[in-house]
Length: 233
Image 1 (spheres, rainbow, N blue to C red):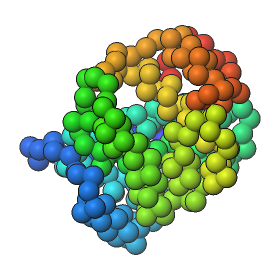
Image 2 (tube, rainbow, N blue to C red):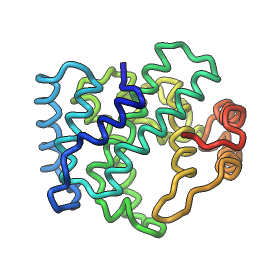
Image 3 (spheres, one colour):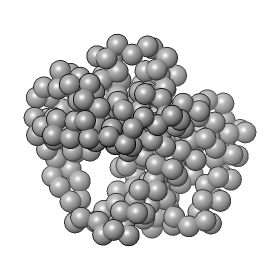
Image 4 (cartoon, rainbow, N blue to C red):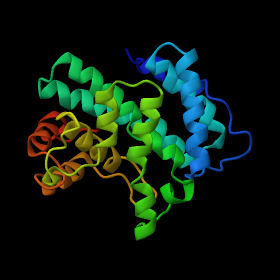
């Protein structure tokens, strides 16, 4: 069971300070090895997946920049809210909702190894920068697996940017499409370095424009029914 909103506030307030540095962890092999070692050690010592995630973020926190921090915490919680509301509207089984909620909290954890300057860039990314950014899903899936997340959660994290028109991913649960749309919706309705927050109607219009190509049309219809003109979180 994942923390309630109250536990979320406790988690946010209990983090260690940045020790005067907001330099991000690099995305090289050394950082990957460090993260794996930390995750595996936490897995041995900490009981629940939720607690392991919190412990992992506490260990990484001093090395993360402000944009990295928002991605791995606040944004993940906003996406969790969105996937649970979408999943409930779609009448997904309780077990699937639980997996979706877990995947939402892990889906952008890989951005702890995407350089802060890329995440905070106030303009469109260059091709090489997009290539680096695209690695966050695989990095996040690896971290989730090392922390002992269920296989379905790991596959949702890995596939949460897969386009609808690329065909079904045999390794990812179908509910991954809910995570994909929820992530986009929460992102668009938040201030980003390169774009101010969109209104709910604007964000939903963008989902509809890309229905059938990027997003699952049924999930897009559900988003329109659930939110209309309201914020995601």
